Amino acid sequence: MPIKKRKPKDRHCPITPAALEALRLMEAVTTSDEWWDHHSTLHSALQLMPWEWPAFAYPDEPCPYPARSHAAEHWQTQRDLRPEAFELYRELLKASKA
Image (cartoon, rainbow, N blue to C red; front, side):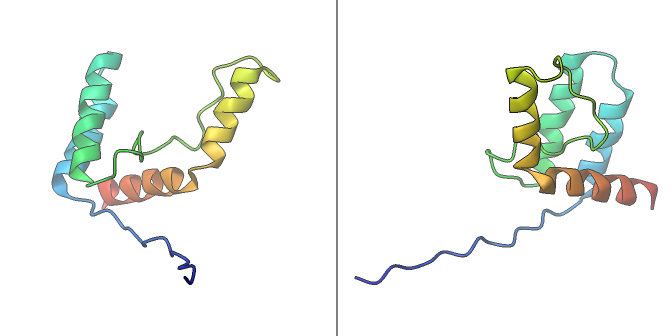
């Protein structure tokens, strides 16, 4: 039986007004619980898959763990696995300023 090589689907999430409103609310909140509530709304509005969590990553976010610790290495590895999360953040910012 021949092996079928699967190609990843080129998924582009729609940046809707609901997504931009959720982003605006995320930037205005003061508590972590509120931020995650709005993030969940954003995630749904962007029609992302469950494994695409969190929806985006801040490109300039500093590592919260001590340098050269196992946690810091894991944190960086996880960021390296999702470059599209940084791109989505840039696209959201661009759309919110338009």
